[in-house]
Image (cartoon, rainbow, N blue to C red; front, side, top):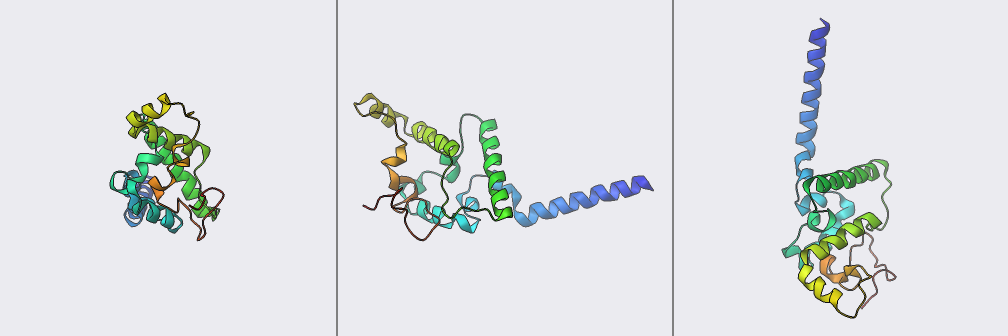
Length: 162
């Protein structure tokens, strides 16, 4: 009798997990579609700004926001960022203005250099010091004129009005 209950419990767990995967479209979160990143309403402005920016034709969110050294680093960071997002949405601890963490800034910077290596080599060979993030000068490229702001106003300290 206990073996039957054990099998029924396993079957119930498998059915519940399968239903969860189906309802939430969980496999999509393992992919790279920008629309998946925009599933959460707090990412609406980031998605909209990216959609109308020059990089939209060439990149997806994961191209800039995840490491590309190897598949393990890629999926570990994808899982870390996803867990952080799930925690924030579950607890309601969502910042008013979404900003990249220092770790994410490093990932984004390395991806700028990875994709634009020949241009970056030319820049670093010049007299100008290479001590800033690419987006400090190229703010409008990845997320458009407004930058990436989840609030209805523009942060003029971070994104000076031109």
